[in-house]
Image (cartoon, rainbow, N blue to C red):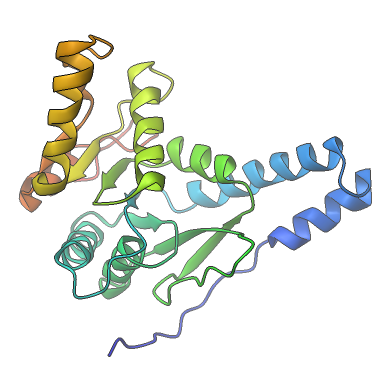
Length: 242
């Protein structure tokens, strides 16, 4: 049975706090109120995430149990990253791969950050999160993560994981963000994905250039993952994570 660690989460404006403040300024449920909420989420989210710099973000399915090989691998890699680089571990703060990543960071005694989302149904924040950055809108969370992290690790996942992956690939391809390493962990899951893209989009329809495969790395080698991350420049450009 998993232990339930007791963690300290610093104070921040909750989603309800942000909404109430914007409603006070602009009234109930109008466009100005929504824009106010978006602005405040960006401001607080980016400020908080940057306070944990340097950081490495983990993406993947919320459905994988703790005895799944991908959960175990994500936890182990997150622990190594935290121990060997001191980087904060970021995830969506939920279960599955997100929990595994936060758990690895927690095991190492490092910063384990959950970028949580408010949903109509309750999404429980995993117990290995030491710091919470709350969001209401998916796009504000996604953009905040994209522009602040030093590296992205993608594990087996569903539509949400692919949405986040294609967002990062497009931002890299169009040079809207720095050359943040995008690492797809697990050849069993990711090579069929690449083969399908090559067969249909590269070879048949020619809607993707083969050189775009250079935007990411597919690997099972944990030492290679650590090497890539250690050689990554911190966002201020003055040093690497090594």
